[in-house]
Figure 1 (cartoon, rainbow, N blue to C red):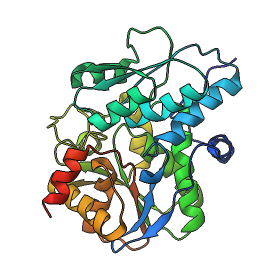
Figure 2: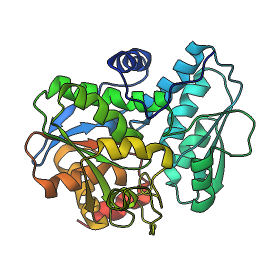
Figure 3: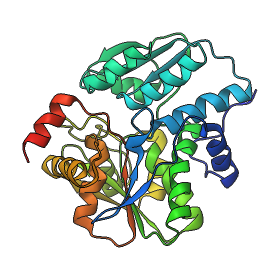
Length: 314
């Protein structure tokens, strides 16, 4: 039983193909839908409501294939990765503990508990400490929601699907949280379309990647709380910096108001419900105006009260 390869080493096509096979029975091949500003990759339609089902399913099944002995699963998540991991763990009869930030959308926390997960809440600083150190104080196997090679390979399956359907793609706009989604998609897309631009999207309430690219390395930035809970931290994870600095071509910043407008537009024009992070790339696409681009609608798990408030403000 060997240790997994370094997450920052380049993914190979064989790894991505293996991930596609592992997740085929759990994750959908989501549609690529044309819109006024960009094609929309609707990961919000996944069974768990977000793209996280890809990485969570791949990492757990890959570790079991490898022969790892797993008796209890532990992770940290804003909610979406935790849901996907809890669902996969339940299918295997494994207990799971998920550490969440206390600002996590209640719909995500309720879903975690509904899946049988033990949920432990922390203030953002305490939760982020677990994300940085993997030290939660629990017995069990810790699965990081971002910094696992198999999680990144799971996200790469999205990129593989995109270039199959849109081989002349010019840009992909991707919401940035920990960076696993962007790192995976970028590697798969650039295998087939090296000139394609990978554009990370942050909200103006928190721009750690934009600051890191400007400084030449991770720096700590101010974070203002908002309903957009699936992205934005005070600092780029050091473990992910080598990938992000190599793969991201630019960062686009959108306002909370622009994200809310994108949520309304997705609901009105496409009958699609997106959470804040899921709508951020759509908001950026509206501003960027790039032909043959794809915006990743990463998830749709938004609190009902927030959705009602946003839709009511139309």
